[in-house]
Length: 201
Image 1 (cartoon, one colour):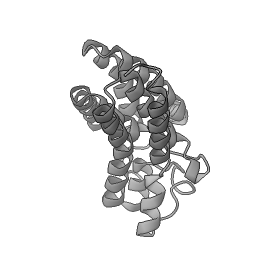
Image 2 (cartoon, rainbow, N blue to C red):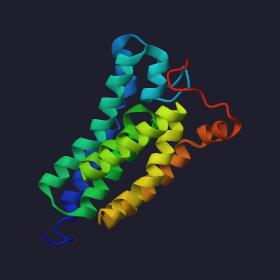
Image 3 (cartoon, rainbow, N blue to C red):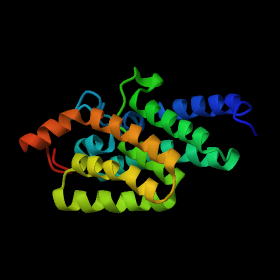
Image 4 (tube, rainbow, N blue to C red):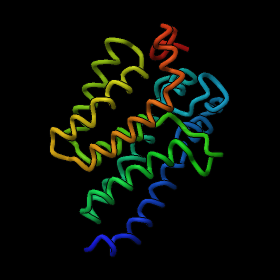
């Protein structure tokens, strides 16, 4: 299929990916479990780390899995339907941006780590596994989720280049830039030594 013929299916796939990404798992889980709105309590971030602080491991795990699936499923379906890396990269970016700026939740989304990781696993299971190992190594040694995320996604483009996936490497340079932006407050706290440990309320 030519690039021109792919324009319409690519636009449809990206729109659907954005809408799926716009489902804020943290808010939905907190509503279903009777927890406070994560956008107004704790760190005020609708993500798994804040849900962990607000409600414990099970709600946080549900949030983490849901956010990751928002990135993984659209990319996997795009790969199965259209074997075209630029289209798949567009779908991954759309799902990620949906999480950051959800149309269903006043464009107040999370920081994007789990959704980015899900999209990466959809793009490449091998590189996704390397990213998970990097995240675990940094999080276990530092006990700071934000530091683990930033270090991991700073490395991901290099992992993809080594794996010969240039299109996706460019995509994840952009995603990493977004992640550093969404974590700008965390960066300030990391520099100041005041970033809370994982699980600390």
